[in-house]
Amino acid sequence: MDKVYDKAVKTVALIGKPRSVEIAEPLVALCDCLRERGIRVLLEAGTAETAPEASGHAGAVVTYDTLCAEADVAIVV
Image (cartoon, rainbow, N blue to C red; front, side):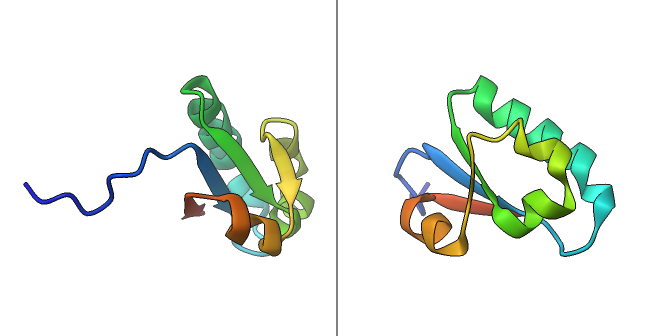
C-alpha cells in the first residue's frame, strides 16, 4: 500500500462551524480522545468563543496563524 502521509500526527487543530453551539459536546469528546493519545490539541479562537466548554479540554486556544504554523492536521466540525 502506498503511503500518502507518513509523518506522525503530534498536533491537531480543531475548528468549529461559526455560531454553532451544538458543536461543544463533540469538540470536548474529540479533545479528550486526542489528548488521551498524547496528541496536542489546538482550538481555534473563534471556535472557543462559540463553544467555551471545549476550551478547558484543548491544549491551547489559538489564532489561525498559529494553527497554520503548528498543526499537522486540522479537523473541522
